[in-house]
Length: 438
Image (cartoon, rainbow, N blue to C red; front, side):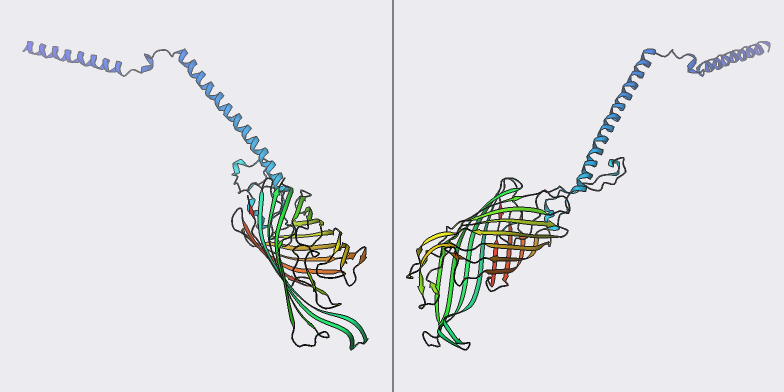
């Protein structure tokens, strides 16, 4: 019994000792790691500090670069705003050359706080395009551009004339010859015009016309041949017309709200057959003569300076001009063919002054419409320094309507129609143009 109790006590003591050792080991394992952590490496710390310093320097460089870029953008925006303030107003039909709008975000706005919505329209030093009505075009060819313009013009005019050769005893009685005459005249001119822009403000032009004319004269010489039947006389002529050379220069570069001024100079030659080269036929002694063939030229050189004005508004364009045509006198010094005792010496056909004005309106991006008025005063002709007997000064006036349609970037189609307002003007005329730019 005693041995058994002693063995039990020994076993209990051994278990207690093992439990104390296990508790001590557990306590050692749960001790904080800092107690046994190694000392930090100073070299690693220096490397980390140096890396952070390099990163900070790179970030500072990027910030400086961004500040310089923002400053450049601010200067550009201020320059664009100045251009917008000085850019001229453009009508709707002339806005095809404008640059597309550019949106600007709020972060790109200059620090002055001025709103910027879009880039300004590019300033154009050329006047806007309009539907052509007159011989002098309003828009000059750009530098280095060649424009070929075939054209076709038809005009019709009619007149009634009564010629009396004799004397009057009382207002109701005439002794002599009375010639009642009606003339119907048709003229077709097919032309080819070439324009070239030497600079953006200077243009030269040349034009070659081909002319066809047809006249029907209905006459009834009452006292010469008593008859109820009228006589019809027909005459026609065709061939090369008078070649023309011209130059135009844009005088100014206007500010917004001011007009464009264009000066021009045109020289007309006498390459066509003139009135002193065709054959004539006398209708009766003392009565006006008839031409058996019609001339295709005027027979005189002429020089025509002009000044045109174009004033663009929104959405219309107003235009006008004045010109002076100097018809240079000529010493014909020969007799007319088919007529005896018809020697012609020095002839001065008289000069002419013309004005025109109108308005153009852009209907859409491709088409435009124009309306205008043209008036010309023609002086009396002189022979050998004296006014030719029976001649008077003439006035021609026409009301013109024009329409233009842009087929593509290089070609457009233009049509103008004119109605005569005086007896000396053509009753009606229309002109078709098809310019093509290279």
